Image (cartoon, rainbow, N blue to C red; front, side, top):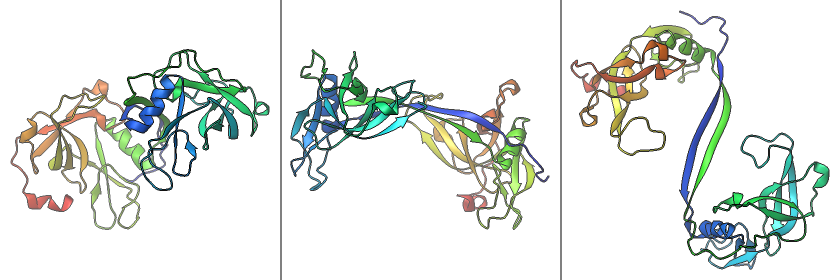
Length: 321
């Protein structure tokens, strides 16, 4: 069948995860200082004090270890107005982001400045840190900066022996995905329990999922064909490492599956068999979710599982690896 005039699909998508990282001795020193109500910089080989501290000298590339405290009061070097704040930004009202050179530092720190309008901030303006009521050892220990000349550093500013060695940063990315006409046809088909591929005009190779053009010569791939939900495993990976959000207990297999009648494999789960029994050439079939759980995506297929048929010969799929 050939693609006609299709109203493409679009949907809002949100990707969220917690990013965990170790800080190392330099950033750890900076964050430990913030937790204690202090701002720590490091002195470079040319005598300049760098804030936040750099791990290596920008001139010599040597490791830097001469840490120094700087003031929590400084001067705005440049700024940008945020008229429409985004979710998870410092304020739900308009504010400014500014590069602030703290007294005792020679480089600028980027942070939010709490002012009511662009008329209330300017280059050269003096600002001071507004510290968070509860400090945990990350950049949010400084809630923001505000106009002022006098420090309001916490009265309980002390040196804390237990250093910050790691941080967890929540990541959230919101965007709108608009499907291509070819992807729209594929998604509508899978909502009906059908798998749709597209045939290349030059030699009849079938791409699954369908693409808008043949990647080899750029010609349109608008000849849509329904393909079966059985195929072979070309290559695979045994997942042994647990991670956040994992819905299957390791070990399990993620494999590239070449559906019968197609010419390019796609990635999906292989279950219903011990991970160490999965092999290249194994024949598999789709295990579909209950129809009431179907949506617009390949997740309608919960996984693939062995058919019990003899393995495919390596020579029959080696050119697809």
